[in-house]
Length: 399
Image (cartoon, rainbow, N blue to C red; front, side, top):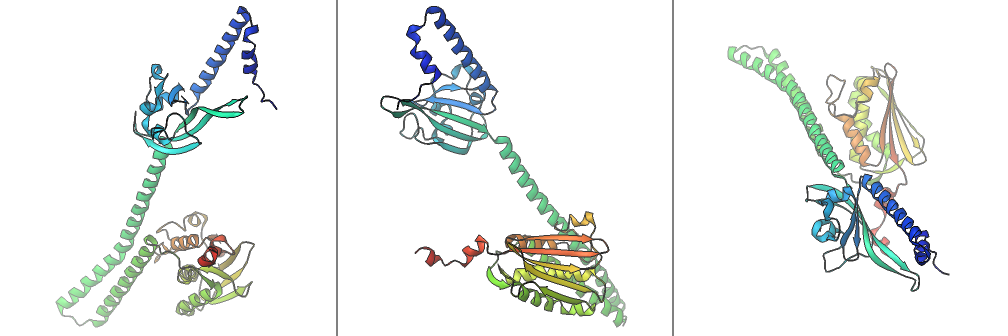
């Protein structure tokens, strides 16, 4: 079966049959079509270069010339290796090879001439098919160059800006949180010093001041501990664990707080053993923070309900309280560092919860209504690929 000919091949094949008038019309038509294509290529925002079999530039649109620093009269027969050596080397020229490369190449790179730019290069061989031999011969390379400098710089600036903003927020939050207890400690220590200076035996007043100092120091210790957990997160030590056992251990840690407010916790399990791959200590921190928030939100002699069950792809746990609830404005900010509506809160607890759940491949959601209460839903992946990889035996995989 013979290879089909293009309309242009058919026309060129009939050149001998054309008279001078028709030949002139054909030349004008081809010239108009070439001019139209050049206009179209020149309005394209990407740079377009066409190399011949020697690696010389046979065509370049306006953007292509601009990117590699060519003037309008420099296009024809300029070596890419000479005009833009960084791009030439990226597509395989200049390493003892002449002309074309044998594969499609995509690169993101930095060039320094004529100015510092970040570009994406797409290079593909141009092949000509010879019908008699039914073989393809490479006769050049088409190169598309996209200038990604603005996007690259914008992304890097945004990342740096967010990093600096995060550090500033953390620093401001820590300074604020440490300032109040330190001020209180300073005042009470001054009281103790005056008492000692006057040699008064007001032991009760001194005792209260000392207790206040001790409490404030303990609060400082808690703030610093939470701060260190927030900025130095640990990689989870994944093991198969029963979520109900983790919850029961956490509730036991909160026993005194629950007893002080006569709060009852009820648990309803939709499955006997909700097993997940997780770090039990980090998940204790998750439940410790959420249950602690619920205890502070509800009145004495109230109830906290914990429900667990299975979904198609997740194991879920819901912690439900009928406390004061969270307003819509506050709800959107609960995972932000140092945002809290509590007088004694440090605003890091829910940020830690969010990070730990993310590290476990799960998520946390909050539904709340002022005056009605709050539902915190935790979802852990079940039968995930990540879990399978953790459980797999490397030795068995090599068999």
